[in-house]
Length: 254
Image (cartoon, rainbow, N blue to C red; front, side):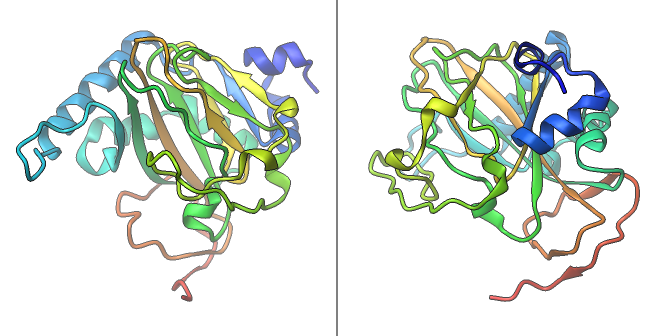
């Protein structure tokens, strides 16, 4: 088992990653991608956004911040990136040998975004079998510009998401602030190219961006293809990145 310093710096050796992931619900791996590679990814995202975003009904330009789901649907660049062995090797270590890429998105916070993401578990948005996400820093992420914070061990149960979007910034599935023990949280600053691998029940949030600088992140989600799951019509870009599909896929029961 790695030390706290190893865990926070992403220096866990491969054989310890599964142990750390099972204990904490996440592992951090530095420099999965180079600065040149994440800069190229940002350029490709800008191209995609310019193609798909439109002005609103009043003729105003699209917002320079938000979330866009479906990068791989729009670009072979991201299909290749999401199958990159540097990511898939770690996923195999912590999840298993049968892996399907499921969906991806960019969270693009401009220099003017000053709100953070509230505490939540991603599972609430899709349910079914557990999924596993890889959060890749496309800019250096710090507490000042909105890096992640996570609660170790929170992936072992479901939490009541009884909060409300009082700020009007989204995240209808959120915990009430008083239901989160922030004394247990791990703050995860990450230089560009670093990846945070986490379970979809791991409680996480982000700081507000008060830096005056952009903070973008790619979030790619995968599933263990050996597990039974429900059918998701929106996961149109799904493809196997390693192993075989051996679990049963059933129609979602409403």
